[in-house]
Image (cartoon, rainbow, N blue to C red; front, top):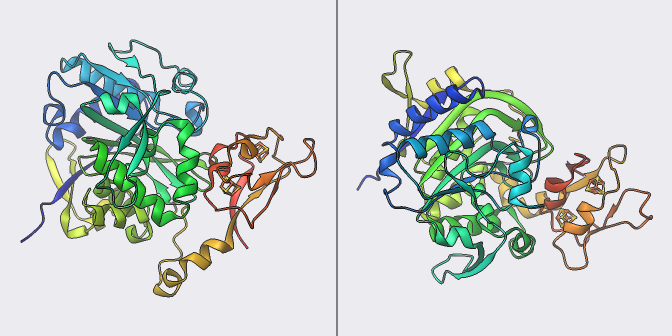
Length: 383
Ligand code: SF4
Ligand code: SF4
């Protein structure tokens, strides 16, 4: 029996001007069924962007505010009245992150969600994770719309639709998840359990300005000029990989997502569509998509896919480690304060006026410190 194909719409969008982004989003959503196929008229809707932490829009750390506003406007114009938006950042509050992007309460009738209250949710059918501390707002939403950002990620190589679900977990409980699921594969499996528990209905990726290199917070903004739309988070992330010439099977969230049944990373089961200049729907092969919209120079690790290295992935992981660029470190202590390892794996061994020092015998290589460093001073390096 053949599997159903997952549709991913990929549309060009060259800038963040509000009208243009909203127009592109309307067309993208229509290509995959229209907003009415994702949200019922009386649904409580939570729009979930990526607010990794408070960051200016130009850094490409967060989902761009134009994309968030575009989604809220589309929902408002379609008559949805019970709409909230927000994320539970790894550091700071949802309100602070929204404020840093110039977003306020009441935008198109939507309020900022209170993402600070944690609720324990049992999920006995989890493959890896059977209990979560979700934000209360996630448990009360009927329909979750994921607005993810196209970025690189030190642990999973990319962060897209599957990884963005970690924001469903209440911020102060995130560190414990990194300890419990310390490697890329177990973390990916846990993420797929979150998707199975929450079932976000619609995924939209902001790839207009993406982040390459030292992502997800300290990388370089790079124009990709695309937005992606799908009901299938795995297919959407797989198409992201195609666009940057990365083997999708190097990304654990892809193949674990396929195994968990939350989507497909098989090329034969993914249909990519776009619009012609006169707005006719057009199907694209993987090759044609890459020829028209791909970026072969996108800075993402493409090594480690060979069978030899795959067999020794644990050893390869041990060879990678976070390193501090001492010339950039401002001694803020955020890495020290947020390391999830009991007792910490990075300390001010030489005093507060010197950069912290890693204890690599304790470090589990979760890269939370790299994610949260405000000075972009931490990099993933190979021995
Ligand atoms: S978070 Fe970054 S800037 Fe702050 S102490 Fe750690 S390495 Fe230095
Ligand atoms: S030192 Fe950094 S990478 Fe190592 S366990 Fe702590 S937060 Fe994770």
